[in-house]
Image (cartoon, rainbow, N blue to C red; front, side):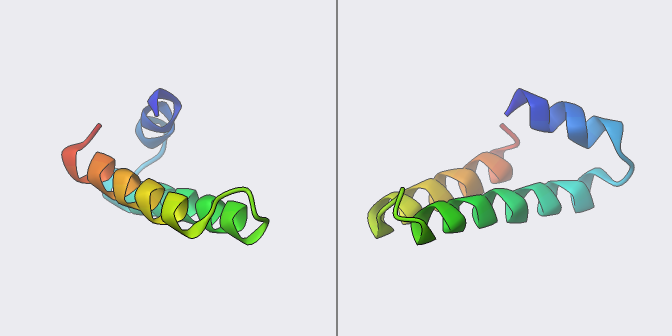
Length: 58
């Protein structure tokens, strides 16, 4: 996550970039699920954890 913070600080609008990073990371999770790396429960748990991290600013 630290590298995400560095990326967000390096580019302009932090709120828009946070939204982009969240969408990007959720897309990666979805791709992993599609490829069979994650099952449905793992996908849902991981997506919820990401959402929580972005809400709390971690």
